Amino acid sequence: MTDLLVLNGLQKHFGALRATDDVSLSVRPGTLHALIGPNGAGKSTLIGQIAGTITPDRGTITFRGEDVTPLTLPQRARKGLGRTFQISSLIPEFSALRNVMLAVQARQGSSFRFWGRVMADRSLTGPAQACLERVGLADRARVPVSDLSHGERRQLELAVALALEPVLLLLDEPMAGLGPEESRKMTDLLHTLKRETAMLLVEHDMDAVFSLADEVSVLVYGRVIANGPVAEIRTSAAVREAYLGEDA
Ligand SMILES: Nc1ncnc2c1ncn2[C@@H]1O[C@H](COP(=O)(O)OP(=O)(O)OP(=O)(O)O)[C@@H](O)[C@H]1O
Image (cartoon, rainbow, N blue to C red):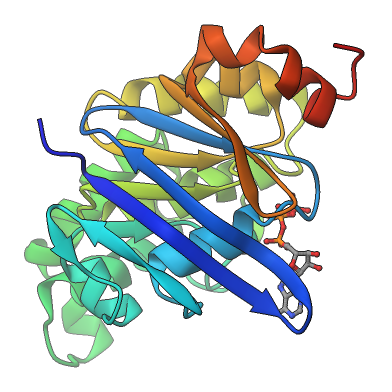
């Protein structure tokens, strides 16, 4: 089967720093591929290049067989590359439903309508409510974001990303700032969602990574030092030495 996403020789410098140093990797359809590495390894920089917010100095990004390197973020999103952010992009004074409706509206490419009418528009409320249901927030639809817990906001960010109907979802640290109970809930949620959407997950929570991932790539100082199935990465002496801080 053709790989969903293929990165070939991606490079990104910030001055003298090589944040991404000749990265090549592939994400297969129907898989959750985790990208792990210590702080500053270049994970977010890589996600930014895939999503289209950071322009690589060199290399190519092929998505569903098409070279998307020259495309902008909205163009890539329309082709099915969705993402969540480390920093929240939610509008705090809007309800959960309204935040997702904005994404549904963007997906549909519909023009501006007066809000009174928008809130009654079933073509927006229906899909938005369905996204909230998928992330377990159906009964929180009318609650303003500012009244949601941190964990619920993370769930809502996923709902917003799902509203764009991604073929591949880029997740940048979905567990960041969550307590153990909320992290478990998020892990369960991602387990359910991975049956429907392929994902590239950046995450520091190793329990979550090892329970969710099919494949893992390990990034250290901008370079991929290992690539493979979870069991292989978990027991790799080189990975433990370079990343997990244990003696090999
Ligand atoms: N816009 C920028 N300008 C200069 N340096 C940057 C910029 N963005 C990132 N860097 C540097 O590039 C390196 C990689 O950063 P990046 O945020 O991609 O790492 P990361 O693996 O995502 O880290 P973390 O796990 O802490 O989020 C770091 O040394 C960082 O300081």
